Amino acid sequence: ASAGVAVTNLNLKPGHCVEIKGSIPPDCKGFAVNLGEDASNFLLHFNARFDLHGDVNKIVCNSKEADAWGSEQREEVFPFQQGAEVMVCFEYQTQKIIIKFSSGDQFSFPVRKVLPSIPFLSLEGLAFKSITTE
Amino acid sequence: ASAGVAVTNLNLKPGHCVEIKGSIPPDCKGFAVNLGEDASNFLLHFNARFDLHGDVNKIVCNSKEADAWGSEQREEVFPFQQGAEVMVCFEYQTQKIIIKFSSGDQFSFPVRKVLPSIPFLSLEGLAFKSITTE
Image: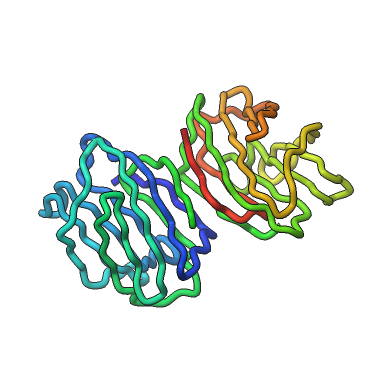
């Protein structure tokens, strides 16, 4: 996916969330939101796959340390459509990250390496609209 | 000022604007919003000075090329208060950047080095709330 917006010094502290708004390209095979320390170390790689790596309409989450992927977690919910807008909130809770959708669905992903705050965020394959922290 | 949020791959095209929302620390001496190519090359260094470098309640704008500052442009309007929220829109119009305030005031700053789109944005001394592109 095309390298999208990247944010450093985000300083997302436990108990706070970051909301991403973007638009999904009509021909999007998949998009991702990454949260972590930098491009090589993700607490969360949130990857929505329309048709990618053999997955169809599947959310696959993982962590990455020094460019080494962890074990994947696959989700049932898939509230996305190609060509549509997307809004997702990521709440950092030290032991886990809770992913909340505008549809009301949510799930969590375990934090495998605790950080005092999350400094880095990047988007892949998603046209950026806004990033908001609460 | 403390290094704040930095955004790369912003891809702000002519005719589009980026809106920054943040909160000004109560003891803030000054804050800045930078738009350009990277940390060394700004099309616009927008610096609101409460009490900084001999300026009191003064907006000072400038450009920077390879870490060399251009000539400053000082503004009359100063719609900011320490400890309050701030919302400012920056509209890129190839020849100039128009700075618009929620108060309705606005002014422009000349673009001294035209870019097809603006990839980099950073904040200094401002607690980040949101970045939105339209």
